[in-house]
Image (tube, rainbow, N blue to C red; front, side, top):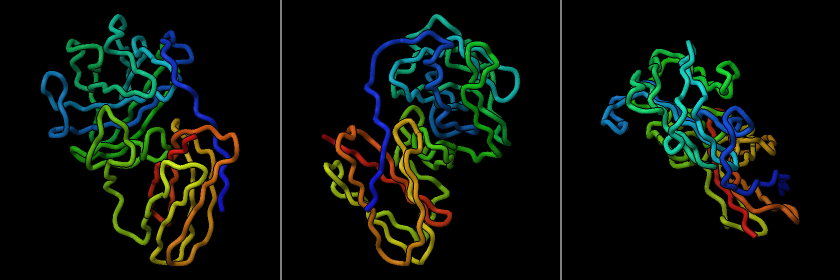
Length: 264
């Protein structure tokens, strides 16, 4: 049985932090689409390139005054429109890379290169990098994003999720049928414990990792497993805070992720 020691989740608050201070540190580039001609449109009906930012913190953050670039000269997000540029705690915002800043503060005076480039978010000083994603050549209408919100693993999504959680509903096009099947957790939500079953078609080394909502890895393990059905049991210790965590099971080149909800 696996006993996992997990970090407690913070309680959401509703305070706006000044730009350039700690609040901006909770922003992550979560997903982007560098060649969009059929997926989603901006408020003017245009299929523009875009990047999604996620605020994994407990306070809203106003983007006004921060800077963005495609790896070249940064462009500053205009101030004075907090009703448009504020990202709520746990929320998302779409920034359109369309070279049409006259269309609003979320329209970047730059475009993303489908042949490979970068998406960079800078602090208010215009030089301190808050987050960065360097990418290779992209396929039209297939976005690239974190496997789940905050994950360190980036994958392409055949069904992009602009302005919404990457979660576990998006279909990663690199996930093809292999020898790993994740059969789910039961019970889920749970208290005091849950069992996660998976099935292997052949013997291989299997790793298991737990991430919290902010994408921080809080536990990992690896073990050689024979072919067949296996089970992981998670029983939080007494006093463990309730909340959402993600278990990722990896066998060879394939990963499967299970959302776990511990309630008290």
